[in-house]
Image (cartoon, rainbow, N blue to C red; front, side, top):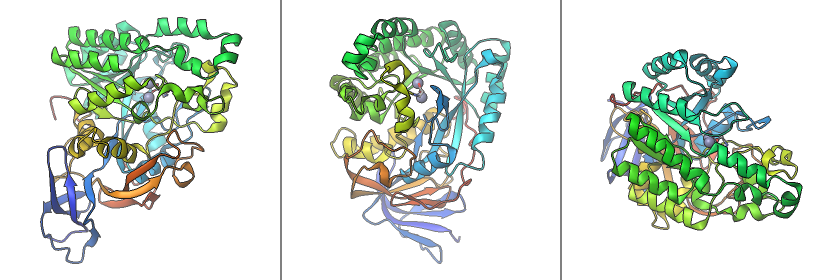
Length: 466
Ligand code: URP
Ligand code: ZN
Ligand code: ZN
């Protein structure tokens, strides 16, 4: 058989094993994985001395999201170029329908696809978004699951944006997933207590005194873990499937651990921001507000608890919650912590920062690293084994990674439109050398080399069909 591309002699790292072999690619697919494949005229990529793993899957991105009075500035084109440069070959974005305003789930998914198609540079999928419950929503949800949109986001906060799903909506959504193989994602924070605390702290005197640190003060860990516990209870009692996004507190991780032990169908994600930073970032008068995200970055013991959860297996995935706002957009806060556009960049730096802080520092094994950034998101979100592994028949989505390359993070050298980075100056050892998306080389040494529009919408499989 003739091939188009042969990745030669790399150390292939999968979730379950590590071995040295060649990978032959024909068109968009992996067609052979073994030693001594003859290139015979195919393009040959020398990967000797390098790691080769399935491209990362960032299951939590918000590209060009209208939010907090502005629109996140990494759009579908630039955001997916940044993904490619960072070794990420699939992103899952959100089609958040505000059903109160008449948007149906299906129409919102179609509208979001129109925004992405022709612009995306790596593959993408969509989570639906539910803010209301009625017969149309229930039917749309069931139809979407059959049509490749198998997961649905619910926000337990953001009342004023009209995005909040109350407990009744969450409960019924979970009941529905028990019937048809869908999955509910929740942003777990306790809206009522949170709003009460925010109001208490929202005085000019406090804002003068504490600045952006008030964002952390107003959101103690219990405003997250109470909501995680509540959502886990509804998942237990309904038998539905629940995925906790952007988990930030160590107590929340413990709740997920116990729920898993009790047989609840629950999974959890954490993000590089929570693993690498602490809430000290909010103390800077000049830059504290830039780190405004919900939930906010927590304390050292939370960071340690999250690493432990990843290592021991009760936190399942790392996603970035990329929602990029540049310094001009962040300046909209004007000293008021309730007006910060909430979100942070991260797609481009997820793989190398977690490799440096996780693998190099022995917090994660190489295989577990691949599992949490690629294989588990593929399995949980219905993309496996098309994605999330390197096997005959899988999409040729591959990150060739140089474990010895030293890079100092500088937003000026990156693809993101952001003019700051939460990890500016971080010293990395290990960086993506080449990213391959469905057989095409889309990035080399941190520079985009692919084609705009190469990415495609990927239909996902419901639970039970994986
Ligand atoms: O602050 C954040 N996380 N912004 C994006 C929206 C969300 O809550 O995920
Ligand atoms: Zn969220
Ligand atoms: Zn998010």
